[in-house]
Amino acid sequence: MKSHVKKILQKVLGFELYLFLFSLFIIKTLRWNKKEGDFIHFIRQIPDGGLVLDIGANIGVMSVWLSTKLPNSKILAYEPIPQNIKTLKRVIDHYRLHNVQVVEKAVGNHNGSVEMVMPVLKDVRMQGLSHVKHESITDFNEGNTYTAPIIRLDQCPGIIESGLKVTAIKLDVENFEYFALQGAHELISKHRPVIYTELWDNDNRNACFRFIQDIGYKICVIESNQLTEYIEGKHKTQNFFFIP
Image (cartoon, rainbow, N blue to C red; front, side):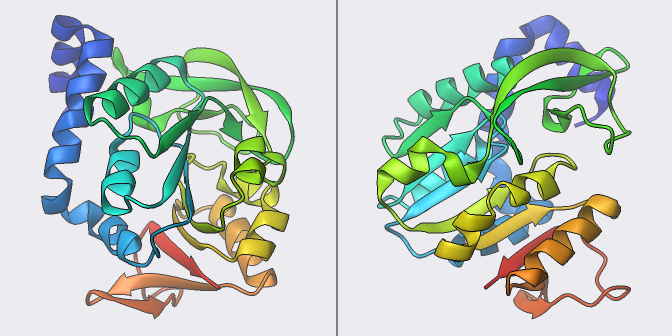
């Protein structure tokens, strides 16, 4: 959606209603969005009946799809930004999803608190670019800031207490993915989940690649509707599958 249209809608509808309606629109049209075809392929890789982690759940689009396509699984949806959390919960109630639990925390390599930012570009609040403010992240740092709790997945009570096998992780935290993976080293090594993540072409991507290969995963992408091992220079994408 064009920035000027977003600006008008956010002003006319109010930001909270805009987020809710925007989420419903994306949920309804996701299957026809060519950019999200890789995510739908990811869902098909997940065995039903386990624990799925939606890291960076934002306004609930992926959580809804994971919940409805995996009705026997439990979905933990991690989101630290207050407006996004409110929308996420409203969307969950709207769809009457009983297998989704919201965790109001950021995910990283330590427990404590962290500063977050929702970027504002030309008077448009960009909820999809919300991220942890960190010295390694130099883009989109101007906007509305928040202090949020942050947790290592290895020590997350919701995972430990569930007693379920972690079957899959969707990871989209806007260039903070490496730190989230660091905090999940034990979990990933133990459960060996399929991981789907969006990674920009930068140092964060390279660090994620090194980390995941060191614990026995291969890096894959979708080519001709099939999973294939990633070849640098050949595959131009931001969507990656980490396969044990």
